[in-house]
Length: 420
Image (cartoon, rainbow, N blue to C red):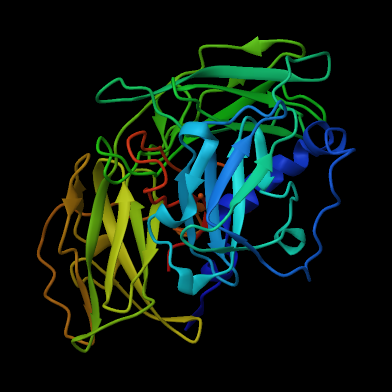
């Protein structure tokens, strides 16, 4: 049996990633602006009541389009929404919210800031919130961010749109990372209502070029399964193509770093064991061209799963897990090896259902066909955890403008993995 280490390292990818950004920006975003702010809450402080969050900038102006993450204490399940008019979001309208999971931790990404609602950077020092319908408003006032670049900082700006409709996308997470050219920091932000964004490198040595990622999985009428993650200049996460470097210069902003994101499709199905629904099976969606896992999911109590992915062809792998160990692996449909797995075709905005896997039954005979390229032994393969510490690249999602808060996001990240 193979030990299942994926689950332990996959928790809280969004927060971990954005926490690293927040820490990198801490000197500029938190230390000075918070000189007169209340001291951070201690871990032992009990939850406070809340029903709505309002996000304000350093001038007290409401922030529309701030990305809100809530996570139940002791859970890996992260739910996402976006602030609307007045910079507010009714937390009880976030898809997947249930009062039974109280209390929740509340994370904010807005105007270059990434941190908890009380301006702390670690869950152990943040005060959780007991969310109830009609509960009081919790106010988060952000520190000053996104100042014009100076001799020790640099900016990157652009606009993000829907690849099919051309409409601007709000709340897309944009992350710029040093791509190995000598820097030791990164920048992060999200798109505004008109799809524009600005991110800034500061607080350390500047790289000469950066890797810029656009991440989204929020749903909307135009993207019922979210959007596919992309690097700058049209390189989608599932493509076996190196990302395009973006020049970074101290004291200057590199503009027109734009992106057009494709709406995801979805793969869904049922996993059973000896005919009964199998809870907690791990589903990995492999792109055979790049030989990477581009999405993943776990089965629910009824054995079902759903994994949003960009348009393309994929291999679906399912691992049966007992006591944290992978005890059996199957591929759709019923194959026992990656090479024999049947390709699943996915189109934008369309759910591809009935991608089922049944353990505890005899596998079907393998029929001749076009072989699926198998990863070479020892290759470093990237994996995305469904629940976006991360090595870039990783995925994330787009925001609905029509129903703020009533949206669900699935973030993914990529990290090293070998084929079983």
